[in-house]
Length: 295
Image 1 (cartoon, rainbow, N blue to C red):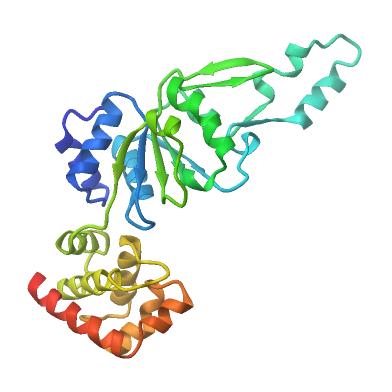
Image 2 (image 1 turned 90 degrees about the vertical axis):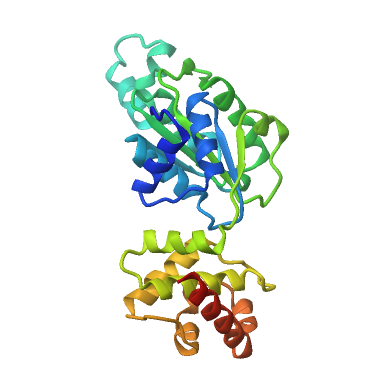
């Protein structure tokens, strides 16, 4: 994954439909150059996961994704034994002696994302997505992987990376991560972009969207973020909404189309109750003003 400058990273990501802010491009560049994991934190929908995906495409690397969740354990994240194959091997060798090493060789391993990334000969981007959803025990297990790029399997030994993967961890900060994990990573906080940049992102990700519609949709969502909502919409929701509006042939926003399509932006019933009638009219007025200024 050879990028000579930060500008090269920016251009490569832009070519993949991802418009990074300079700080993010710098963090990605440094993570690649010094071969250190990068922890991306921020609210949901600001582009953390998409950054890893775009980096993999830009670098021509294989993306290996580990989606974290409560209760995630080694058998789902690292490896498990192919017991059916082991049993067949035992039966085939019943007349002879079979030692333990033969029963627990690497050929009986089923590789899960972490082991697959460590053992791969290819160029790999390892995405450990939403690490804050995993348990403390799994977070502790990651320390060996992130510091030494190796995994210890008791029955076999230590497997070290032949070619270090680029590692991107994401967190929505539903809980605080431990200092030991953070020390092993570079860190970057992704914020909601300024309005002008969000309009650029929408136009990049939704080809052919009318310029005025892109500006009004981005401004309307920016206004929603200033309201007291159960779930503030991210850039991903802005893109989804712009795609929906463009599919309906809209050129600009009006109250009726907003109410009909707001399900692309809001995900909680309580928020729909908050954003209705006068609130829609007010947000629409602000969005039209901002949209006119942006175009």
